[in-house]
Structure formats: structure tokens, C-alpha cells
Amino acid sequence: MNSKLIDGKEISSSIKNKLKSEIDEIKNKHSRVPSLVVVLVGKNPASISYVKAKEKACQLVGIECHIERLDEKISENEIISYIESLNENDQIDGMIVQLPLPKNLDEEKIVQTISPLKDVDGLCNENLGLLASGSPRFVPATPLGVQRMISELDFKTQGSRIVIIGRSKLVGIPLALLLSSKTTLGNATVTICHSRSENIKKYTLDADIVVVATGFPSTLTKDMVKKKSIIIDVGVNRIEDNTKKNGFRLIGDSDFDDIIEIVSKITPVPGGVGPMTIAMLLENVTKAFYLGVKE
Image 1 (cartoon, one colour):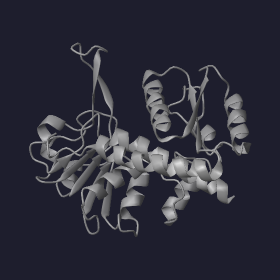
Image 2: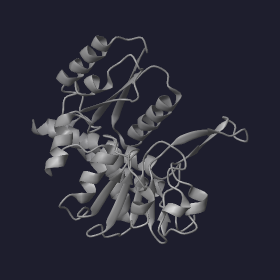
Image 3: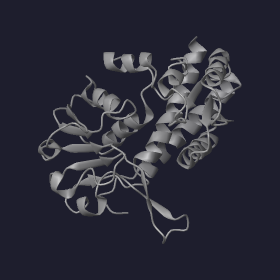
Image 4: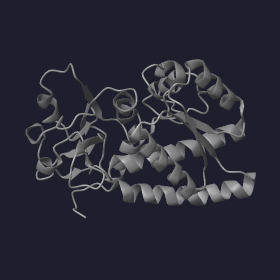
């Protein structure tokens, strides 16, 4: 593998191996294993693919995973009632609602129904507030995975300049909080750029690390990148490719082929941030188990 590539598969594999041993110990001590319920509404192909990957990873480490497949015509009240029943079930440690939901459903209202103690995606307002206050409980898995990747590079974030392109509640905002926090993996000077930012290039050319998470190909181009910097590409975009059996291939939000020539490190898509996201979700589910035991 190219020495410039940050291998998310390899890092996540190490994390999962440690988790498997930990879950074996949990099973011996508590006679059960951590459990996760994934709520999947409708038949979005990307969502189905992501959920399968999560289910497979759970099986690998020994986490009990149930996929609740719901029809896209389900009412908001029915989903909320189901989530509330999971909140009350002490055999369920964590739950996630796979996003995006069909347009007729209020994502925010549904996500906020999840108990903060079972919110392993870290999207409830209470958990985001705890992260902002410096006492995180559950951190969204993708930002957590990005932070872990950076730490594996032996890169000192303290005093460094990091630019995040994208301000979503799922990635950009929590990642900025993580990387600027008063911790050994934080203390960076973080700038968030977004769709209303002017002259993003001015900020990225000064950055030691650029994290791009917009969901649009070619958001980050070679002329926007400082030589020897580090690029973390969170984007996953499907583009048509008739040479592939399934008719498409995956690319990120950066011009990978051009940028790799000048940077010191870059994440591939696929095989970069994606595997780390799943590994961090597994860690969050295990953490939720311990919180439930304490309760």
C-alpha cells in the first residue's frame, strides 16, 4: 500500500480485535453481551449497505445486533412508539436510527426520542451538549474515528491548524469540539468552513490538516492544499462507472488522484474513514453496556 495512505481498515481491525477480547470477558462476567438495535426505514440502497456493514462488524466482535426493518410509509408516531419501547428495554444497550429517513418523517424529532443513555450515534441534544461542555458521553462515531486516525499518525494536534469543511451535526461540529478540546488529542486551532464561507482556499492553504465532509465531489482541489499537509476525506459519493459490475464506484469529496502527489498523508475512499466510523460505533455500544450495568 502507498505509504501516503491512512489505512482505516488496518486501524479499525486492531480496534475490533481488542473489542472482541473485551466482549468475551463481558460475556463471562455478565452472562450476556452488549446489544444494538438499528432502525432502518425504507429501502435506500446506501442505507441498506451501511446497515449490513454494521451488522457484520457487530457479529465479528460479539455484539448482538438486531435490524428493525420498517416500511417507508410508517407513521412518525409509530416509529416514536417503537423507540420508546426500546428505551424501556433494559436488554437493549444502544440504538441508532439509520439516516436519512424518508422525507415525510421529522428526523430531528425521531432522533431526539432516543434515550441519551442509548444514543450510540451521539446525536441527542444532551450528548452533544456534554461534548461541548468537555464531558462527553457518546461522541458521533465519524468524528471519533477521525480523531483516532489522527492519533495513530503520531501527529501532535496541540497548536496545529486544522480546517474542517462542513458543519453538520454528524461530523463537522462535533469534530471541531473534539479537536479543540482541552485533551491530549485536542488543543488544535480549528476553523470550520462551509457553504457560505468565502475564499475557503485561504484557510486550507494554511492548514496542517484539512478534513473535508460536504458530500460533494471535488470540494477540495489540489490548488487548495498545502504541501506535506494531511487530508482526511469523510465524503462518500457514488458516481456512474460502467466498468464496474454494480455500475458505480465510490469517491470522496477531494480530488484524490491529484492531491496525493503533494500531501504527506491522505485517506482513501473507500477504506479510510468508513471502517473507523463502524469501529467507533462498536466502542460506543460497549460503553453503553457499561453505563447500563452501572445504572
